[in-house]
Amino acid sequence: MTNLLILPIIIPLFTAILLIFLTKYIVLQRWISGISMLGTITASIILIHTVHTDGIQTLNLGSWPAPFGITLVSDMLSALLVATSSIIAFCCLIYSFRSIGEGREKFYYYSVFQFLMVGINGAFTTGDIFNLFVFFEVMLMSSYVLMVIGGTKIQLRESIKYILVNVISSALFVITVAYLYSVIGSLNMADISRKISEINQPGIVTVIAILFLIVFGLKGAIFPLYFWLPGSYYAPPAPIMALFGALLTKVGVYSILRTYTLFFYHDTGYTHQILMVLAILTILAGIIGAIAYEDIKKIIIYNIIIAVGIITFGISVMTEESLTGSVFYLIHDMLLKAAMFLLIGIIIAITGTSRLSQISGMIKRYPLLGWVFFIASLSLAGIPPFSGFVGKLLLVKSGFAAGHYIGAAVVLMSSLFVLYSVMKIFINGFWGVPKEFPNEGKVPVYMLVAPVGLLVAIGITYGIGAEFVHSYISQAAEVLKNPAIYIDAVLKE
Image (cartoon, rainbow, N blue to C red; front, side, top):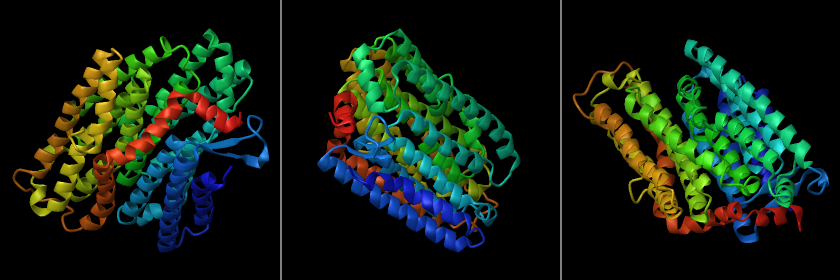
């Protein structure tokens, strides 16, 4: 048992509380927030090394042994996602210093930002299904504030839909948890898994599995439950949009990954078949949106939906190779989606528009921005040797090996459409006759590109160093494929 795994939760928590009292001191808020995120990153990287060498780490809060108390659990999947989220949050934070504006900074922006990280890191770390709901709510309440902070017309309009969908989803979540508790008699994830295996997943548990899929599908934007996402994620400023696009939907996907490999793996012929069909439809829906729109925000937003479908396809195949591919692609997509949203934020800040037809010739005046966007686009689309290629290769191989030819073909085909959608932005926006832009020379481009460049550099290293990273990813997939490892670590059996 170690206290290390609670640090990525309590560091942003205490920072958020402190920043509430420092709203008038913007520069001080920036410094404290930046140092706090660096501390969170450091703790999460040390945690990855600890899990890699010593195995799954657990912490029983209040010294109540599992399954009677609240348990925090950090396996390799959890540790990797906490570290990735913290790095993305740090880059979004640095980007915010020059872009979010003092109007938002004075109204608890940095404090709410830290509360959001409490919810995200807590959701990845908790070993208790009810506390997963609690951390979801912390995350969502923070996102409600970030969605409306600034009070622009589009933010207020879209926030109504966003809040309504998530309130309904949260109500269904707590009802489903209560339903599960009434059947199983436990809230500890490891204990739930053990008890479901003892009764061999009867029909009532399968019903609960579908309810969880609806709940997490709403939060993760799976077909047909993604209807709220394009408008809601379109509204906030670039750093908030990057946080939402890179992290919030991935918490929903992580929840499907965790529950469908830990709880509901006995009757895969029904639950996972439904998940596979929805994954394929999600990819197709995302492709249609990405190639249909001429708005650069909408193009990247629909690429989120494509990625969600690709990751959940790997979960539905349910082999060790497919799960390895899903985890690998999940981390890749978090890094590159954040980078892409921040990049289009810079483009919009310079041009004053997100309409592709009104943007042209930017590479002549902003070559660094153009080539960083180009490299990020290639990586996002899965062009070798970038990180997207490795994850998709594993997913396609596992799909064909398991006989799921249609799904594997759709995943393979999606790379072409992702590449087309982002290259459409690059070719039309950066090449051609340069136009005069209203904010040219007023935007600190090089300062904003720096945190984006860090994310892209990490993404490139992640792909080129895939052989080194694979040992960590395969360790995460091994626990997903063999729940007994997780159960034994938590319940000490």
